[in-house]
Image (cartoon, rainbow, N blue to C red; front, side):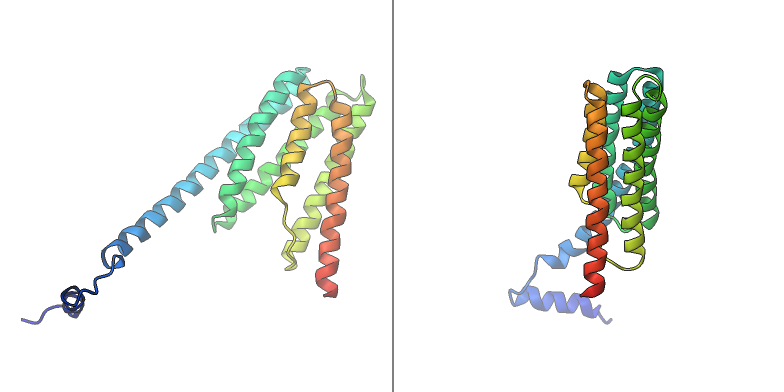
Length: 205
């Protein structure tokens, strides 16, 4: 009866003292890596769902005139979206990245749009800042998406997202919402310029 050549080879290594730890641990490591990736994607999806719910709560609170509650909901939503963005970036699922980008854009549309609507009569300065911040944020997102679709290395850094979420949430919790939104508008305009310059540099290089 012939024995499996793989068994004979392993016996030869064991007899000669050449056994490798990877001979028995490699299959286990491969399975654990797959399981970790599944857990990461599953966690990212649930964080995005919770973030979408938080966006709705923040928008409703803004329209209802409860800025403090809107700020708390916006802060919790920001934490969920930032964590989900880190998990989705490390995965290879295009659908998850599209969903994350969609929820991220929904944050700007719902929260900033709600602020513009709620403050349009009493504080037109704040409402105008929300509109300008919303437009500049979508412009920056368009430049990034367009550049990436054409093959240019244009990515949105974590710092930009933290600033965007932090300014909106901090402005809602405190009394400086108007100034926070205008600062956000300037930051997003600068982000658009920087991303466009990155495309130009890669094109001319």
